[in-house]
Image (cartoon, rainbow, N blue to C red; front, side, top):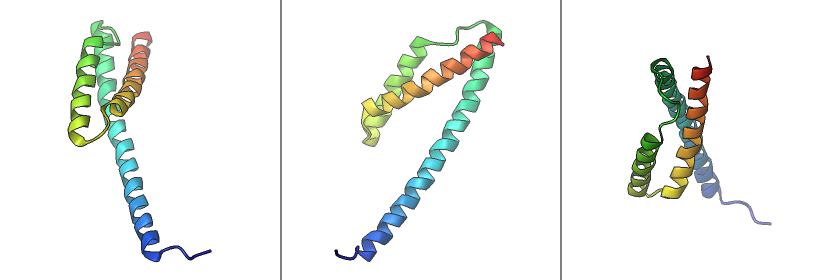
Length: 99
């Protein structure tokens, strides 16, 4: 068995550190996004608006697909991620209506 390439190992460690930092940034960005959507949900509940807004969601999905394409990210993948986020936002907004 051959010894692993030391330079490749060091590069792997560096890249994994970058991935860990990016994961942390994603979590913090999602937390900030959900703080904003919580405010939206509370406002919608007080004003009598429905928790979901399909026309807004469609606009956001199309916008995200364009941004993803421009950034070199698969738009279908980005849409899947946004759909997960939207579903969680709507679930949270429904809780505000029930409170």
